[in-house]
Image 1 (spheres, helix red, strand yellow):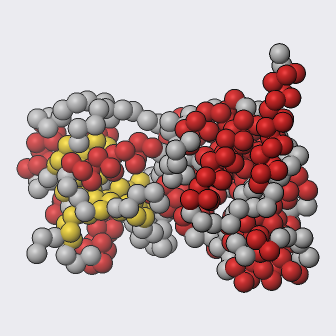
Image 2 (tube, rainbow, N blue to C red):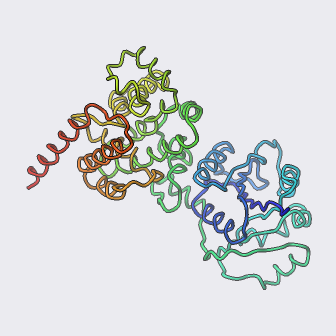
Image 3 (cartoon, rainbow, N blue to C red):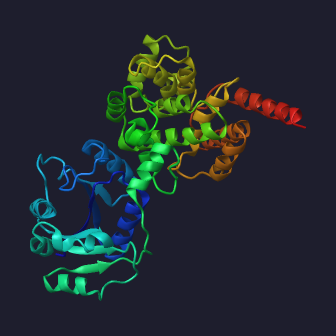
Length: 400
């Protein structure tokens, strides 16, 4: 039986960025690996004064690899209290995965440091190397590389064009508020803001506690969705000149009740004396919004009615909804990981231009989806649609 071929992406991931994921995906394909194991270091031999806490770097990595079926993250280097060298990690991995062959993915700069790694000959015997170019296109004939090969090192080279990305530059951009979407994934970008890493603006006063509670109460996929919705709300708030932190907070907590069983949600609704229709009380899809507002207030200490209303109505909308309500409503439907539906790209474009038209289009699309799926429609849906139509017409008249 062939051995399982496991690629290893090690590093500080301070923070993990899109190039890391691109390299891993390329290695998976070109070296025909079965899976990629991301290993954030815990106590690296060469400390960086800007190094985020190991738990934060692990969580950022965990979030970043969630969308990939063949990517996973390991804390093997973080559970060790002392300094752990690559040779030690590889020995542990060989003990854990008896029938595996390991391929250590490195950058060109790391290749030229291999000779100085702790116990390099031992490392050469425990893994092969997959090299991604950072500055040159081909160094396979370089005398230094030939010298390493003579000592047992085995190299594979990826076809990715050379690209030099500096994590220190990324951290500076985060601090300055100028980070590019092309560098960080939505969930990592949002986690950094939520946890106030790298001197960015604080949005959650009790971030460690509140994020931990949210993480514990949601499935991984729902947590990823919540961060992506907050990321989208942040951007829409900037475009439409709304309070960014308020939008972001409402978006982050919008699904805080989503994974609570229906019967428990019904009990919370009764105890809170929520005035809901029979249709709402029978559907998790409709009930988790109003119940989420109760949870946000009682467990997360949110007392801002603007945030609570946005959470309560994020699935349905309501007659008279505000621009902030629309941002949360839309962000939930158009976040980057949302499964495609016919009008998705059109609504994403509309959301950047006109919140009323985007919300109207989204509700139209939702009516069609709910009808086709034979699911319950919120009793006020058509009233909301009519109100939005009137608002769009009035706004059009006032602008002519």
